[in-house]
Amino acid sequence: MADNANSKNLCSLLIVSAGLLAAQVAQADAPCVVPLKLIDINAGSGKPPEYKLGIHVGLGGGAPQLYEFDTGGPGFWAAYTPTPPKNKEQWWGNYETVQTDALSIAYTSGNEYTANLVDTMVALYRPQGSGFAKQCESAAPVGVAQITAFADKKKPKKVKAWYKALATGKPPLFGHFYGDFGAALFPIMTADKSAGVYSVLPQLPQTGLTNGFIVHVGPLGKSKPTLTIGIADEELATFTTQLPMNPTCVDAGGAPEAPSSACPPYPNFPVGDMPTWSEQITYANLSWEYGKSSDGNGQAFSNVGLTLDTGAPATTIWQNDDLYVDSRFLRNPEGSTVPYTGDFKPKVRLTISAATMVPGGHDLDFYLLTGQKATVNQVSASVRGNDGGPTWSGYMNTGLMLYTYYDVMFDVEHGVVGFRPVKR
Image (tube, rainbow, N blue to C red; front, side):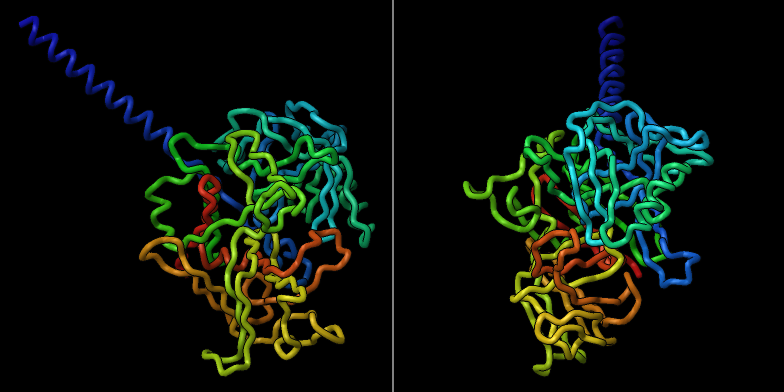
């Protein structure tokens, strides 16, 4: 009887232990899902809608604030003032300054930041009742750009508005955000290149999952945007359209270029040790024409870099000598010779295509009839000027538009970007 009882007890113990282990594995393998907020930053202004995504983030234990979620922006840039007004508690909690005024960045919007590089814990939140619930947090402090100065060379009123917003306890960026939560996969380095500010997302690895994230937006106003951090195998298998990510290196500044002795690679992500990737995350073929089938009136280009940028409300083809739009496709073309600039005429059929890496999978084969609604069907042709943004050109920024048609997976660990059609 004693032996039988011991056997039963041992069996029960094994069952309980197995159950606990299974529960721990299930918990460890759960991805972090964070809601994103779709905002029309032109609402109430009488201007056409201009959509951005927001994400609630807390710094060093401070109260979470809304930041722009920007897959085209490198690093996390967060507004700061040492003297917030009485009606606004300090949103910066604990942090350690690494280098003072060591970072700078310029965006195509004209916004320019100077920042301290600081280390702090970063947590992502979802709204819950009148407050917030923490969804996940970095296991160790990560680098964040603490904005100390804001500039816009062409719009001094924006500069005054930024500092006034901080002084009155209001979000300074577009009237909604406290900075730019960049999710591009290369860093902005300090002037001496000894350190850099990187995207937070690959530095939030989820145990037992592929290091990466999935962005779901869906049809504007008809879906609930989310960010999923950590990719389960069964989730990865649903992305049957997969393309290789482009590498980059320090002197390329985020443009696609294989690292070499002449252009050393960026250091891997400080937490998680993941590799870096180009802002032009992959290559695709572009073409545009009138009508549903080619009759020789179109243009076609191969291996064009794609920037999948949630921070850009507009879809833009950034031209150079090898990628240009003929004036007959533009409504009011500007310029006396190629490359011309302007918006595409209505009902031009624009196609983005690429072959999938997945055996038996689905190739990327997306088309759009152009129109005049930003984030819906408006496509522009432009050239890089002295606008403070990247100097490289000859690529397409899809903007937020492509995310309304596809969930996009960034498998940072394996260097793969995936597309999964959404219901419309």
